[in-house]
Image 1: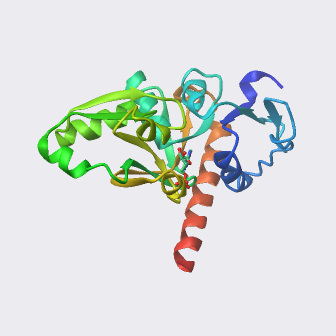
Image 2 (image 1 turned 90 degrees about the vertical axis):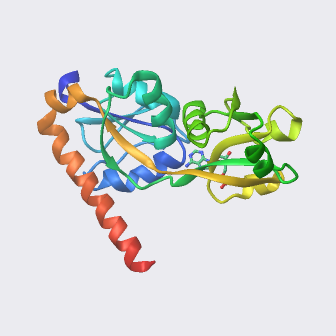
Length: 230
Ligand code: AMP
């Protein structure tokens, strides 16, 4: 099948991958290999015209924006950082999939007087992977920060004296608790978004529209079921 007739969906392994499966199933797309056991990076699906490529979560926006994939699923946290660097005009974002939900928060050591530092207007050393979201949040609050870019294990930074605070994703709060950190600010709620390459949307509209609609309907259906059971 020619490249023009194939739809490529970029997914990161892990929670987003698992939670995307039931949504694409609504468009009759079943991934035929398990990324946990296969070493393949391009996975076939039950539809000959759809393939899945496995990429790092932070690379999903780049793959989709630059045409390496037509569609992708990415957390709002990653999307915000990508948009700040790219200007934000390179991706169409048609659906909030309401999956991989968590929150972006500020956390400090339990013995750190965050409120006092903020009140006094002192500088705060903040370690995070999410430098754009953090910079915007503290600027809006009028807090002066020195941002320290990290790529993982953010929780370690306040424990070793590298930083006073971290900005990180929190789901259950167990990781913070295990490291004697406390959440002091809730910056925003996070969920994963379906993103689409704008050129693909034009060129492959006939093939893409039914897939987008099936996913939209599946999200709405799951959300209504969830609300009725809540
Ligand atoms: P938890 O202990 O459940 O609060 O999870 C916190 C840890 O999991 C932190 O290291 C976060 O960076 C990571 N985490 C939580 N939710 C997500 C998510 N939706 N996507 C990626 N990482 C997450």
